[in-house]
Length: 231
Ligand code: 5RP
Image (tube, rainbow, N blue to C red):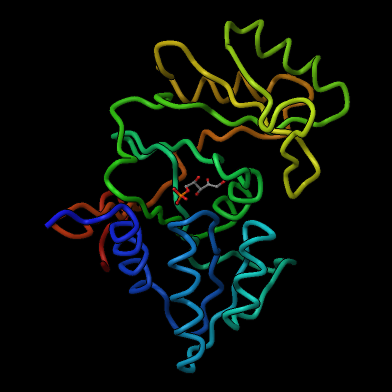
């Protein structure tokens, strides 16, 4: 039987629901895979579980409100568990995220979490990051200067949405979709280089942040990573 990508995304997200416990503060990711997780958390809340959520985007905040999850946006302690999708996952569980445009808040939530769990279908697993574009969020003010500096690193890029109707992030910024010829050989170092450019607010490389990846293929979801126990 051929499973559709959506069914695989759902299988991965539902597996992550097994990690949600009463009383938890849970980071709610963005995108079509994380959506299955948020809807599932909504069902747990409807069944009486006391869970609060920290949404990683306005879209997720709206969904969380729709399905009845109490929302927290001011933290007074760590998030117990964050669950989010990804665009690419390499063998060291480093990620590219942000093709949905929510990378900055997603990174903030992942960083503030005790456990960061990534849910993907198997098509997201790559040998080396950079097969597709790397989203970089930049301040709109003098954004061409930031773009020129990125181009100076030998990168080609496009402004998401085009110059006439650019995509605007939840933080009021622009996204430059960067192509790295030959892929990203050293994601950690490359991320540091990108952050040195004034005007770069954040980039979609998540390096050394993932505790567990739940990847769904035809044989069902399986957990990878240093903290894959418990599922
Ligand atoms: C949004 C993201 C998403 O998690 C990522 O794009 C994966 O999305 P999907 O689950 O729809 O494939 O990083 O900024």
